Image (tube, rainbow, N blue to C red; front, side, top):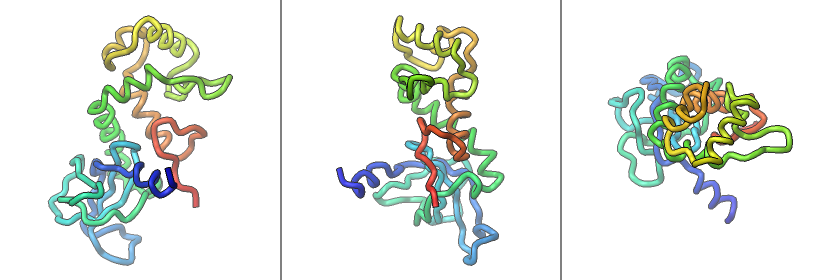
Length: 190
């Protein structure tokens, strides 16, 4: 697969609106409305120009290659630092919503995650998962694969909310401070 084909395959189809700026960013030379978005597939943070001003925070919008009804142009990727305060506050809610709506995919992470190297397992990257929780998760999944978030919580004692664990990890990765990127697309380096 060529690099261009791979890049096209990694494009987001749908996104959640994190913030709507009717007059654009104050640092921008042009005064045009912009929205800050979070992609549903790879949690890519994007800035786009809406077609109409009726866009709402938390709304799911189509941003794929086909005919878009709410978004005119995708301007580019954003870093966490470029998000507005409203977008930063909305981010955990949007991430949790995406995780809950794709429960099977994210439960699959608990079922299939493996070691990253000889010292660390990929599940240990989730905030709050140490060696004891890791051992409990691996033992439970060896008995039977997990079927839902509720199943994970009930079979692994003292484990926090799995959705919150995943959402906290996504936020950490989006901030760009991580050595490993297991749930998101790594940030662009300029």
